[in-house]
Image (cartoon, rainbow over all chains, first blue to last red; front, side, top):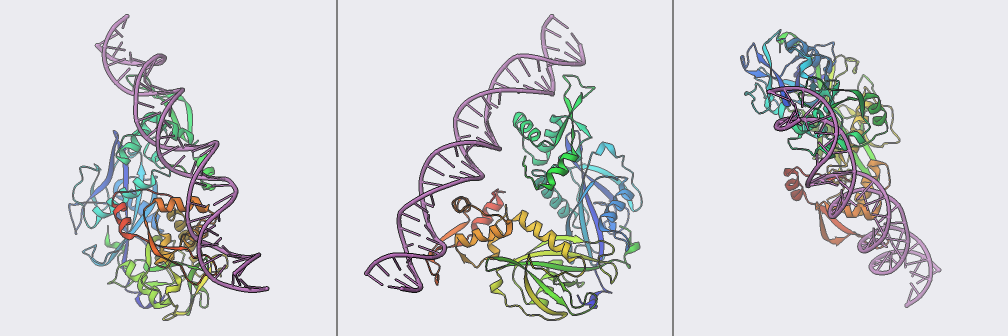
Length: 229
Length: 229
DNA sequence: TTGCTTTGTGTCGTTCATACACTATTCTAA
DNA sequence: TTAGAATAGTGTATGAACGACACAAAGCAA
């Protein structure tokens, strides 16, 4: 740990890949860059890390400043540090990925971002920097993680139907799931609390609502449990 | 991405948690610090990232410089960035974890490291900085990953017996495995090439040697396969 | 009242996981 | 040379979980 390179260290940024679910469509949150380089191009929200803030705090701050999205599930993804990834010089970026119920968050562009918007995954613009690669890595992680950790709930409102939950999994995994088998499995985890309510404003038989039981999850997590959808 | 903090960015280091297997014991590679802070304390090998090198290259370089260990399986673990994790100031560290057959590598302390040595996991000294936490995270990742990715082989010589492989898994997972079930499962993956050789210099019936078939693994990996020990 | 849409439920055959014990081989030492 | 010690190598039976599959009940709209 020689301090020899200390005064000439790479600069450090954070970037966030935030997924949201809209009409059963998986979308990602992008900003349009208001400054060079890549001015006018879409990019992941993010920015430089201040000296007195943690990495995750920096990611949350930039996300809130540039898009208005706050209070979300956020997790570190990977750190991207190829020498030539940023034309401004040597900049290493710690990437996070997040999940939100996108109806909870009205978008609001600010600071350096000229605009902020949700994009469907199969209708993406070309992104600035190496952000295509970061997005790809986030998707892969999401697909992997959703199968053995209950993070699908983060994309839904607090109360949801089993059919909604199944759609989440189907969109993320990109394959249809059997209704009866899916229900059997998710109910067997013991992580869903059955509510005495049904959905409203639907033009057909209303489905029962459920809530994710975070308490039960914490308990199971401690025991190092294992499940798989 | 405002450049406002660009000239006052956190400094960036890499650290490596390298595991090796010795007499069926899982060990970790540490160096004794030769400079302040924490002078004389054991720590993970690591150091500052130069402006013109990738993160993984930096980790490999520091590892070779400080311990002589090179050419190993190495993978990014997590980036640690708590504001107060280093008394010298704001220093963010990208941690890697690695696996080696430790008999392949003669240790050689150099540069800033006063010494380098392998430590059994249940006989660790107190570590410098937040390295206890980094080590803990690496162990957790290793335990998780070894169950669904064939990385156990990295700890063994190129040719090994099934019993040796079973010991690797038992040490990492910290529980005994059934011999017959274990053999059935690992052979079923199709990732082991049975050799026409047996071990030598043993005081009992010699066991058949196997080799990990990287080619077969690459093929399966592309298909997005799935296995679990 | 009829039609439309979606909810909610059970079984069966197959596969996979686990538990479990003895014979075969090789070397060592008497 | 033989007995003993150590480890290799092998099969089966039972229970659990998985996947495939179809229809009646509920509620709303016209």
